[in-house]
Image (cartoon, rainbow, N blue to C red; front, side, top):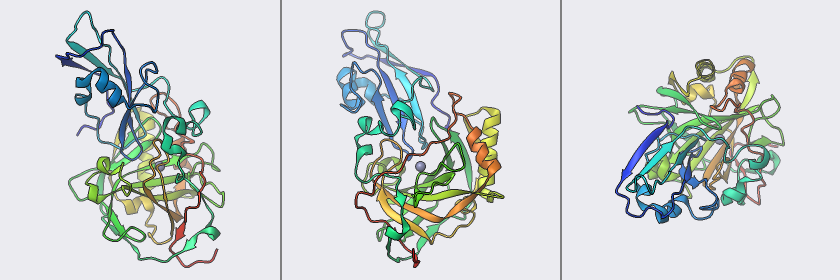
Length: 371
Ligand SMILES: [Zn+2]
């Protein structure tokens, strides 16, 4: 199983007849979005502006053969910035060869959660982040529409799968593996005939107990939020689904401080501690089920609305389910997340996007309750 972070490699491409007339160095950011999308951008601003022609277009003008021979990226869902890949085109010494180098880390993150590359800056690079149906939102229960619906039907949520935690640049991903059919859901507000398969889970958390969740309820921010990412099964896999208008579904659960974590959260926190101690990028955490992570919260009381990914490129194709009952986490386990550092030695904490306006969208609730 290859799931290690893209490591330093070199690749020789032979026989390129259309190399540029001048030696040129191109750095490409290979991004893995939080929900599995893979996209690329050029670093060198002399060659292309961010957000203007895609790197593939620019590159295909420059070095057509490179585009087809880009090394395959590991199919994991992370917020990781992969790269840079630099392409020194050696015109004189080896006119027939392009040498590609890739490194794990970037000196400067392309986007971030604060400062000049923080959330206000995202729309400049990723126009969809400035759209009208963005996530997260502040949920005001008394402004939501009570609209009872069928129960959510969840398959294999109680099934155990081999689970892994993989460190990314801005978050860590927890994913299941194995030949067994993955968990999936249907029913509820999900359109009739559609079903969504579980692809992975990640958390957002703060550096202090009064911040960290992405969604808010009546302005209240929890210390964290867990996102169970699903893709529409008709597209076969996450990569195919990410750019489809009905491609994604996320179940969001707030994290709430408690005396003890649930069994699944304890397992994940132990994995996080082991990453802290070992300095490794990934850890095998044994077998885990979604139910164990949820602490057996029933999928009955939630808010529903149509929104977006909460990290660039902020695609507006997510059916959001934000549950009223939080997942329980102990202070010690939450602190384990806070102590985790990325490869730059930086904390992942405060990796939550601020709330965005509803812009007239309806937020539904499925349970009969007065607010
Ligand atoms: Zn998320």
